[in-house]
Length: 157
Image 1 (tube, rainbow, N blue to C red):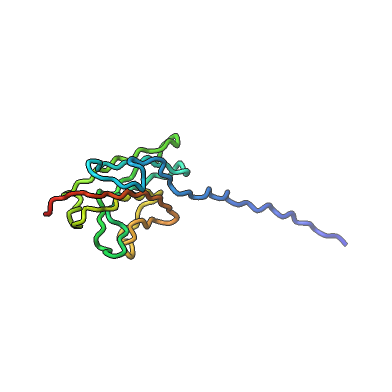
Image 2: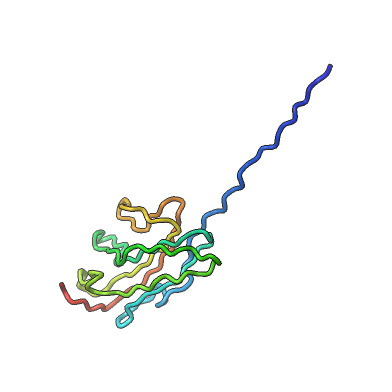
């Protein structure tokens, strides 16, 4: 009895994609989580992403999240896109300076505000459900830091 043996070809697969890692906020001025009072009104961070090809998407917000007054938050400046670093070095994010009038911070009379920066490795979702300002396109990830700005005296408008 004779038999024919047909060789089985090896299975080829694309290499698995490297996992997506969240951006990392390396430093903040003033220190993140701190209570800040005037005259300090400028905030800055340095951020990076372990995935060297990821651009950074930056959003500055005030009074977010605010579970008692959902509509009281505000985006402070237009979202920024910081191109990825060619050599993997951290990227300085343009600093943000609070301005009572421009940022409409007189809306809360107590003079206390939460200032937050959200850094993502994908674009933010436009018109997110439930006003989720940190929602990004999948498989994006975010990093966030905030400060408490107290005793800000803004002229009423």
